[in-house]
Image (tube, rainbow, N blue to C red; front, top):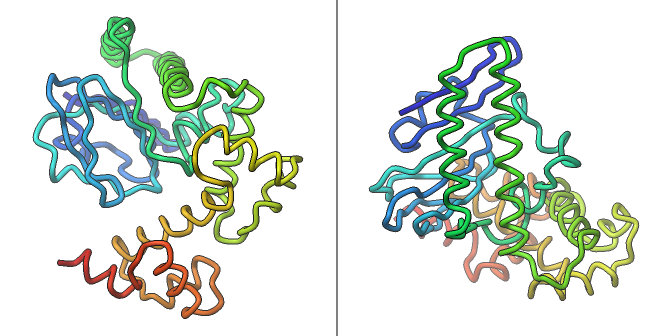
Length: 280
């Protein structure tokens, strides 16, 4: 099963399928999409995100963006997927409505995997049926209706993410600072390496950020910045044909040797050794 709403005039897309591995390449737009992947099976399913094998348990969801490399070569069971692009629904422009940036999408923390509680399973499955019904209703307001449904789905997932992935000690204002920091790092990691630079953008002190992230998780703001640089380096080494010197320049290192030392410190391997390991 595959459905899509596509407006060729502006290039907008909302896709919906019960088997993304089978139907993923059949959508009108295949790049720059954001996805919500849902394991509706009674067994664990596997997929690879940025080269890491992910096990998605029954009634778990994971979100991915076009920055990540997703592979279904290890996937044996169908995965339900909702995918959309900026032209259909821009989560940045609508952040005040859904508050998902930096939690569900474009964050620098661990991969957001959320579990649908048994008490909410009926609500999610009803939503699934409502999407099916709306895709079958082709009229002049179909796009508006589908956008409203997508927004509601994002809000439902964001609420679960806040409950399951963020410690209870944080209030809404603190959560917003965490979200905004994550998005800023994802945007500026190539040019801004200091916590103070992000603190200035957030109108906070570096100490305030450090104290906040001490509550949020075990990583300091500086470690999050370094991890984001290392993640992009691993992506470029694994999924592009760029040489080490090109990657170093793209990531803002003036000296390739400095990049090599940084990468080895972060991963335990030189860039060349890491590339060899990935090609075995």
